[in-house]
Length: 66
Image 1 (cartoon, rainbow, N blue to C red):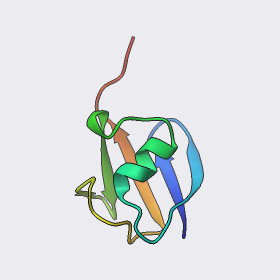
Image 2: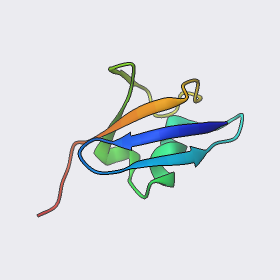
Image 3: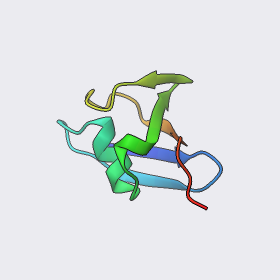
């Protein structure tokens, strides 16, 4: 399954994920840590260990270096 991953305020990427892929796998695929983001599906947060069921997600960074 291909999923569009939008990192809010940054970039949008297409990520291929297997049938058993989780939202944490999507986050890692865009070089972020699941500990520093929240994944949103239809504007609602989803658990990082939940299997991917959406074809478009938004990733909101909670921690940003400076």
